[in-house]
Image 1 (cartoon, rainbow, N blue to C red):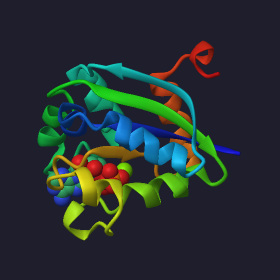
Image 2 (cartoon, rainbow, N blue to C red):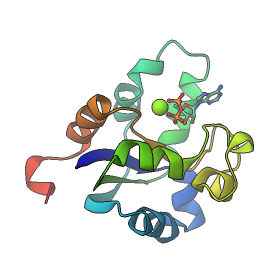
Image 3 (spheres, helix red, strand yellow):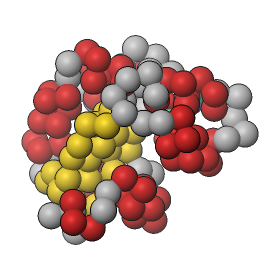
Image 4 (cartoon, helix red, strand yellow):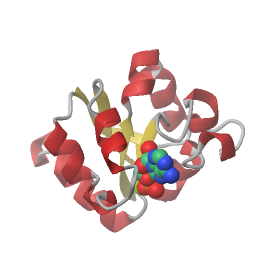
Length: 137
Ligand code: ADP
Ligand code: MG
């Protein structure tokens, strides 16, 4: 069993597709261990995406991530990290395979609907960033 962190980004929350996206997780045997809708602060977004701090798109990414509420969830299942990344599709929705979340719900590479951890190690850190032990049931 593996765990991964999902963020439904402000564009997808504003579109009203939280339920549709979570349904895709459960349809692929990813169990919802924890979930909550929150408003990130600028500092939250900057530290969550610190690995991208030197990239030219960093400021736009942070501004976008705080432009409205997000839904953060911990998903659990066999190969959860990879299963979730496959469900999400490529970072740029124009390159995302048909039937993936980003192909179906994302507008462009800036507003691309979802985040997913890219490794088991990063998943652990990202889960700890958002959730206390008592929230992980
Ligand atoms: P992913 O979200 O697929 O793991 P990355 O970790 O590479 O992608 O990037 C984090 C986020 O930064 C992306 O989801 C996207 O919102 C944004 N981003 C990445 N690359 C670009 C880019 N070239 N231009 C604008 N935004 C980008
Ligand atoms: Mg990433």
